[in-house]
Image (cartoon, rainbow, N blue to C red; front, side):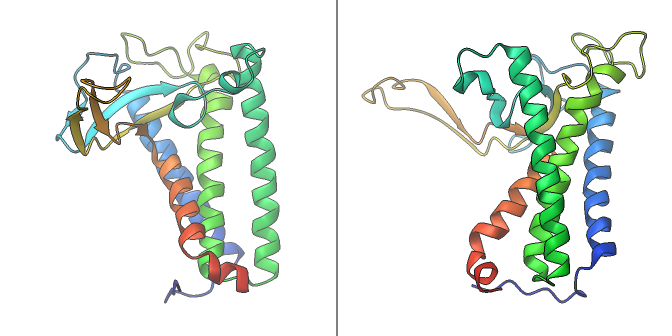
Length: 217
């Protein structure tokens, strides 16, 4: 399967444009939500609710879907887990940056370079939340956060990632005869995410669906 792009070959300048555009859009959306709405707590109405799409405001202390390193390594406490996650993200970003540089030098295909740029930009977007948001914002529980308070809600490297997008496409109730979940309601794709997550997912999707092209380059 081939993925063809009609726009010019991605060079360093265009790669930087893509990366900075994604980061700016991601950070603008997060800061706007942070400075205009309190956290959407369980049972609260969504900021916007169109049924199939909801705009919320939640804060993610861990990785995708709220998972933490301490969920996999039980002897780690939450603070150490959070710090290690930030360090892992930094290492991953340096690795991706090197990969992008190498791919540019080797004149890799537009599709592969685009995927790397999207993943890199998304990773940086979420890392900025983790490093800085705790120190530059006050908390959002029951109030709208303030920018540069006397004391932030967490130290540097311990901030929470801001998520706001949800697409609860379909809801059903499991038949009662199904073990463990019988009779329980379930919403397909109830996860809440942000533009950085979308960028990472899109980049990974390009690699998965068009990997034959990448492997032959």
